[in-house]
Image 1 (cartoon, helix red, strand yellow):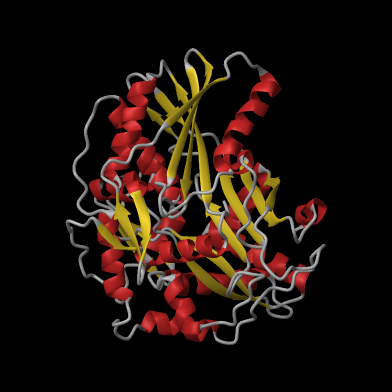
Image 2 (image 1 turned 90 degrees about the horizontal axis):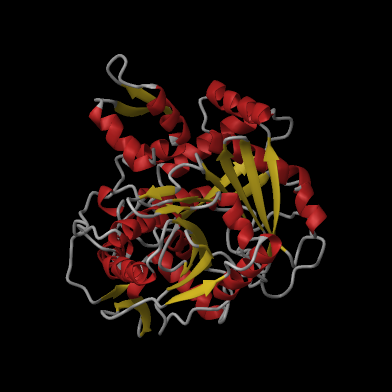
Length: 484
């Protein structure tokens, strides 16, 4: 059960959700919350709290209106990504590749047409960037994605895996020209008569993680000859609305004032000792270190979360802050966390770049127990999530921190937690089935791109929590990353 299905199921059984001092409370008729719903609530607790926090009194209820737009400004998140791409010409740091397994007898021409229909439905997949006074996204009416096809059915074992990785790396390592190229590429690899792999590479300007759920569902519908209801709004409408909300003529924002006050005087960096000196300009070549927390230890962590009325995310954030303190000696830390930016119902079915970044300022006080660090982190999470609508770019503009080409502004470490990471990764139709491999496998499949010094991914899997640390190879050696 994915997040949208959970919300619908809760509504159908008459459940009402509230936040009580940051703790999630569920009010429902006796017996309405069965074991399946309880399990889904546990896995999606962070998203439920995040969404409820976003519905506070400061939320902007101005509707997003449908427009007949051939062009629109880049959204504020897109502007940040586009500026990076302009400054780092040829970089692939914002390329995102996913490899799905297709089971069944795949008709290549039908698959190519299904991909074309998905591209026509979702504006960011058929947009290029025009640069005038401000960068704008312009729709291409006749955009199509060529489907490259490779037959590797004659290979087995490591030979197949090596050839597959080579094909994926070639697609991943080619930079997009955002002024001329639509931001998606596709390669179909045949493994056997009824087994294929579909490698899709996107520029992050056009998609985020949630978009993949929408995209593969739509792809299967179109492949099997189905149709979909028209979207109530599209991404260009959202971008135009966001500029009206946060543009130069915006009024006072208590939420923005909160972030400015919260981050004023924060340390510009976390002084983790590195194996190599930091260069004058940031490098984005990364590598991956993988670890895990067994079932018993994961259960202990979740038990602690329940005892403290905290989410698994918050416990991991407190643990991450404690680890960063041990390695750096700093007690005042800023850690970046992503939020999905889709708290409005009309955005749930869209493909696009909605992710916002929050800069959470955490404290590891002298002599504090871990539970005390956790409680402090919980307060920061609740306060930050309730003000998540403030775009990171707007906050940067207001704070105007000193620019340093060798590191990201405000924070250089990020935590990204995937609750129930293995759910909703299969789409089954009457003719084919689409399966995404485990997230940890996807992260390791392509050469890592490290936008920050350290990015820690935590994934809830059946065997317990798995961790994938993407680290900057120009700064850290593999054994150092493993200790972190």
